[in-house]
Image 1 (cartoon, helix red, strand yellow):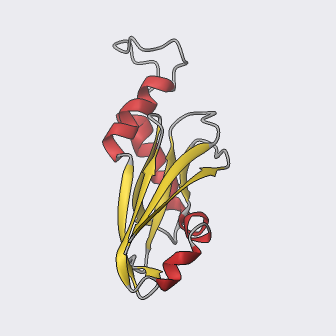
Image 2 (cartoon, rainbow, N blue to C red):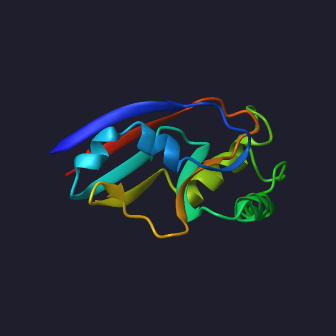
Length: 138
């Protein structure tokens, strides 16, 4: 069986944010799934999703610092600049990290590792609300 739901996240500031609990809160039906998959897709080109460390917030800060150095704003070679200096770097960062994650569901719970969580990677200074498509396959 496949169930799908579209949700809107509140606006987050630029950076890497744990959203695992926000996602699970929207999916009480996961509790009935013995074995399945959750696919999370973000419907945006300047934000992304990834799975990483869920305990130490300095990891999220370091991720933000790394990507800002890897893809700097105001690079002279960017031509897509009419939406601001953070826009083209946001598109590149989103492509590097990806638009979806898939997580196993086992015995009614996301089967993440002890230190894993779902990140919303907000690459814009003012990205606004973000829309996710949540698909549960059981």
